[in-house]
Amino acid sequence: MEKAFEIRNLNKAYKGFALKNVSLSLPKGYIMGFVGKNGAGKSTTMNCLLGITKKDSGTLKIFDKDISQLTAADKEKIGVVLDGCPFAEILNVKDIALILANTYKNWDGEKFDNLRRRFALPKDKQIKDFSTGMRAKLNIAVALCHNAQLLVLDEATSGLDPVVRDEILDILQDFVQDENNSVLISSHITSDLEKICDYIAFIKDGEIIFVENKDDLMEKYAVIHCTNEQFAQLDPNAVISCKQNSFSTQALVLKDRISGEYVMDKPSIEDIMLYYTKEVQ
Image (cartoon, rainbow, N blue to C red):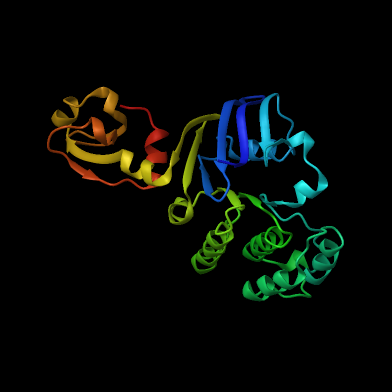
């Protein structure tokens, strides 16, 4: 199966933080959600993949090429939305469209104008007067309009209202209907990722905890509700983490390692992430 990108044993150290042997890859035609709390290493991983941040060691490939070997044509096939807006604040959308038409060989001006209208972005208003949500919509429109085959989106829907976020999720799902197209997206809005992602990668303190098919992930775990006495009888290897008070316990567990009568709920991605950031009490 062809891969949109591949990261193997990526290491990058800063004072007080390090990525440690980060490995993940995504087949073409799929969407991967990248989750973890602030400072876990999501942005650093993405920046290394894009060549913005220099790795210490490891292998980074996009379209089966080492990122150092990517041509200008290859780079045009990568759509990127990072935190913030990359455009000079004195520019307006009309200016940006003109600049990008002269920058990208495959710039699709008609598609950009359609998205501009769909996102209600004014042509003549300067970027400095855009709201956070308007800037986010502009970034996404640009990423989608130069024939990209891989979108790398770091908190791309931050600041958007639920209606617009849902519209963008639909656009991303349409985007991967072409099996050559793929998306890596980080977001703190994990309910959005549940709607569209095929795979979920979770990073904690610079280390990948898991990379799983989303449907398998949701079936693998359960949140159980029980008395403290019942909890004490569980196989410790079945328990990921728990919340406990004087009388009862809630715990994230590996479902297939649980026997007996327990009240179980299907966890959300947010549940799984929150329990994994705790230690078993």
